[in-house]
Image (cartoon, rainbow, N blue to C red; front, top):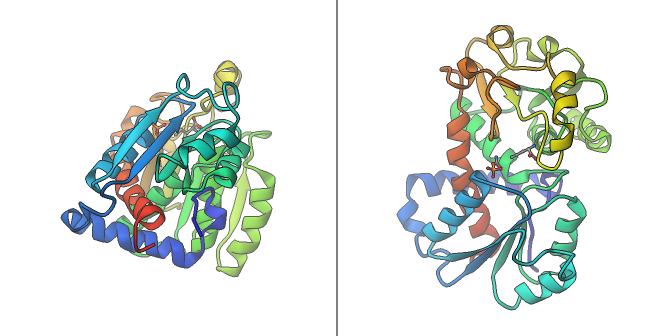
Length: 307
Ligand code: CP
Ligand code: NVA
């Protein structure tokens, strides 16, 4: 049966470990996999802008011997020119996999339901699983062991935050989330993840003061205050999030060897300062690089012969 990557929620511990092990191997010996997806084509359906997700999947499939087709907002006009069901059924006759970046998470679920080929969530309003996998892979590269570490997410309880909550709780990483009131992550994600975390000896904690979340943290993570699709709220959010910036003061509250992470794109001077992005603690561009390595592992797992 075909497999999709829709949300971290559906990944088992073994599946996460297998993706990370294959990523290690891909990084050490990329040549070994250069024919891994020969003759295969990946459709990249993007209803929102992208740098990392688009480029990393594009280059990634090319490095595995495959090919990609970009379908931007004006190409297929999902749900407008044609239903998702009909797009899914048609593309399944041409391509071997689909990456979808969209607004409503239901679009990803529908694409996966009707496509006969694997569907990968390249970001929805609800989650960004490829990002969270690359982030925790980066954390593992730097710390070796991630269980028992503490990640502080400071900012908006958005798609990236939801995926981090899922993956941290599965891997026994404590996650402390600081948001202004009213901008918490999905409460269902929090309640489900609290149970999973407890079983794995870790905690999911929520705060309204960034200093509290940052205290002694091993990782400081942030993301933009207004995500794609929320541009009209940008001004209102700028005011609500003014205290939630990762700056030198917050960095001092965290462990001195902490890693600073951001999924990018960053709004330098808003959610994070130049000094912190460019500091020795920052591993932000390692995360961006690892997007590609982790996604190559995901592509091989979902589209390769030895799934
Ligand atoms: N982090 C991330 O997904 O970046 P893009 O929006 O540029 O793809
Ligand atoms: N939360 C951001 C992440 C971008 C990678 C957004 O959805 O725009």
